[in-house]
Image (cartoon, rainbow, N blue to C red; front, top):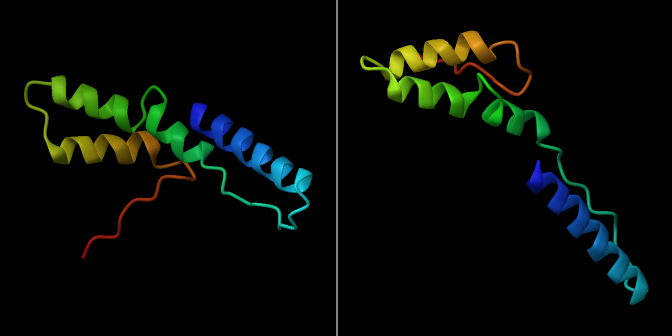
Length: 84
């Protein structure tokens, strides 16, 4: 969230500075990664699930991945890997 705010402010400020100096530029386009950040930060997201799994006495990587697939499988920013 803070990162998005910073980028928006910074790019807007830079573009204004270029305009003030008469420098011709194209509008800077950057991808909004708010959906990805939400998957990472929200309750039941990647970091929350990892913390829970680390605190669970018999936690494992397999159970962590299983929980991530169940919790985040419907999120557009989360893609299940295709394993061979």
